[in-house]
Image: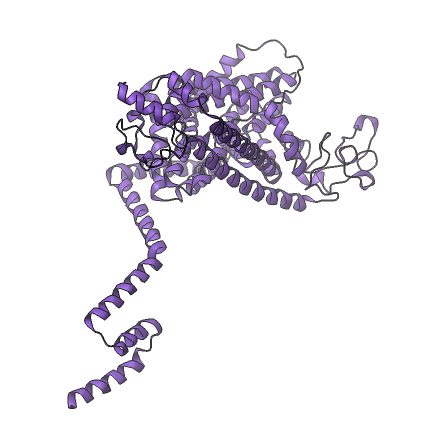
Length: 614
């Protein structure tokens, strides 16, 4: 780096925000360096970002006067405030999803299925309850209780790996107000989706054919597993109590339905608290059936919403509630959590933008550009702390949207999150004394490790998920409907179609099997025809052109009132310049506005005839 560039960058990195406000473009700087908040910030490509030294990073981070340190402190407090309630909203979102979808998820997980159905059920269950950690824990418990086989558990955790990425994809939609931020955030979220889908596309058929995960983990199993204690991450301990005071989901309902202890959620209703006292002891304490205790006499009963030993019953708990009441409470909390999620996301983004304003991209890139293996370790460590890969990727997604974290750095962090989330299943297996439960948890771990080995170390393979994510991000520039359509199609429509097809083969009758075979052939031919149209018949260009037309139409409708006012002003000026009589101008305006042309026309004809006679 030249001396001039060093002087320029040192000055810019140490200049307080606002003092160099006259320079808002890299074109106006001698070195051509881009700073955060520049007008042409989005035009700089990653390969154009220059290299900085760690000394410059340290100086930009730590060398400030008292006023700047004060602003940094206020900004840090604001960021922590919004981050805490962002995590709170995610926790509340998960609890709400468990209340709304718990019965359905438990029913999905309850049956022994074929491999395709197991994969789809794992994905749908995770998408419904918004937590792969919960899903994998339930799957491990089901295997430990011998309710499902180890092979079925393997396919279920593969599906859970896909479903876990729906949360951060939803979070990326919170940056829809800014097209550039939405493009980067959606790409940063979907790189996780694409990696998981690609891993399943390779490893699922491999497992069906060879059962390599089953045999690999079976060789690693000990003779027995001792009882252990469930570990809860520190972030959960900070956020969960507060969220539990609003709404706390009863995970036992999902497990009991999945294991067949009860037939439906109706067995838990109506909710009952002894003596009408709403606390854990009188409402949620379990009956000891061996001691002859009965519900309503010796212990209470709770449904999808339960109470906590420490915090008591949440605000949305209701004594005597039925299934409909709890579902309404879950729906209300879901809406509240989404609203709070968006508000906190906007606040967090705003605070970060103000804090990074004027910072050189070289400094930001240097500070966040860590080695891929280190990024994987960081992602795994964060996920182990928060006990949720959804929280890890959801918190990182806004940073990608701001441009603080490059897409190339987001990929290893999400891969680490995939590794970290398997710890939950391993801990659940340690609580069980069943070796099969530990085998499923190990399969989950080695499935993610296998995916990383396939798609990350080799650069040409690594570029596939990165290019796919960038393409999806660019699509949001053409239409803001791309993210919601993508979520609905990828996480719900396609899985439901696959589940429907696989159910035909599960009937074990010749008729349904033949029908399913024809439908599968039709789907394969339809996919082949679509690919041919997409690649060879300019399908991609036609779709892009359609999106461009919709975008142009929407932009035209937004600016139509201003354009009409502009045209009216120009018509008035033209009328004054040409000397158009006031009555004709008024008549034309009246003709165009209220449709009284029939009344005006005769008057004009009479005037024209009189003028002609004169």
